[in-house]
Image (cartoon, rainbow over all chains, first blue to last red; front, side, top):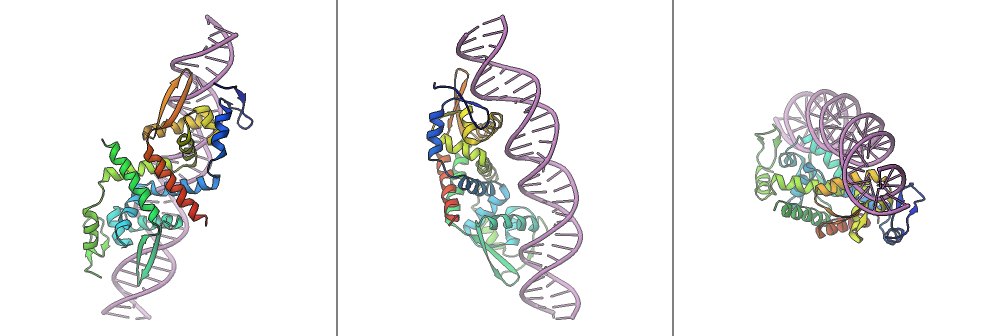
Amino acid sequence: MKNKTEAPVCGVTYIDEERVKKIEEDFPAGDLISDASEILKVLGDPTRLRIVLALAREELCVCDLSVIAQVSVSAVSHQLRLLRGQRLVKFQKKGKMVYYSLADKHINSIVDMALEHADELQK
Amino acid sequence: MKNKTEAPVCGVTYIDEERVKKIEEDFPAGDLISDASEILKVLGDPTRLRIVLALAREELCVCDLSVIAQVSVSAVSHQLRLLRGQRLVKFQKKGKMVYYSLADKHINSIVDMALEHADELQK
DNA sequence: CAAACATTTGAGCAAACGTTCAAGTGTATA
DNA sequence: TATACACTTGAACGTTTGCTCAAATGTTTG
């Protein structure tokens, strides 16, 4: 145990100043953490995860995505807007159809690892 | 383009029945998707991501975590409960102190990839 | 041009979320 | 044994989320 001091910011008594400083020294910037958590949050919804998993396999239109994601076309469209916002998906228009696909391979790895971890937790 | 049929479930007209069937054939089970999205959701919050990033570096008590996560001790404690719920962290009591650490290496890889992806998006 | 269709959009609403605050538990120490 | 301390917990709160429904957009086709 180290010395106990008053924290300057939040009034909490914190315990190991050195340890905290050491960690804060090489810590990702606030913006980076915000962006990364935003990406994870977007993937952290069953409907959107279904959409992403489907698109990881094949380019698909909104209509077909709604069947796979098991929600209305409108709901899918709303979710696709979020996914576009995070640049996780891209799209391509063919007449009145809109075909979506994954924008980045990174997404695949993140999603695969989450699935793998979930699978292990199920014993 | 293939034949257009009425979808049996939601009344949506869907476009490419074959394509949908092919994807649904080897699709992760519903439970797996739920669990995986739950994990991603838990990581998809800046406070919790800060906590996880800190614990990826070193075992820490709640007090120090509250400094690093930049929220009250109570808020950290609530978030730690969620992280425990998903078995992302474990803890060890030493007297009145409680030291938390990461429960699984998988988490590191997921978080690192999200950071990497976020970093690339920042051009 | 009119009707059909794929998709998007905005409002509205119930449920879930993240924080604060106050109170509670349990351990150490004077 | 009383006080201090580390942490947890529950209620309350304002905010965000994900859906539905109805209306709008834009494209194709009769």
